[in-house]
Length: 155
Figure (cartoon, helix red, strand yellow):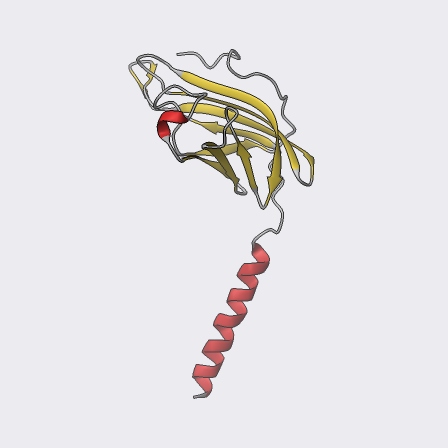
């Protein structure tokens, strides 16, 4: 019985130490990269870049670029100031709210996903350009916030 109590106390202590290990606030400032697959000197998968700068505890400047890769290299990008709360930012392309791009920040990356009520009414990106993906954090340095659509991410 005593060993059961000690085992329970051990796991309880481990669970509290895990909670302490999870940061309460994630500073998203940095550069995040999605690397596509390269075949025959062509980028055949999705690739892109996200640059983020924390402006205040609840606001970020974000520039975003993504491309589908070979053969058409269709791409999409935007640059905006977004609300930041609970490690999450949301971007609404267009005037209606039927489409949202969600950015969920982790310590070593950012996960993006598109949420929509009607896929035919989502504007801003060509079909298949925007996918759910995880961009890896490559730098925590303060990035240059600029239009990334022409910065050299070429085929």
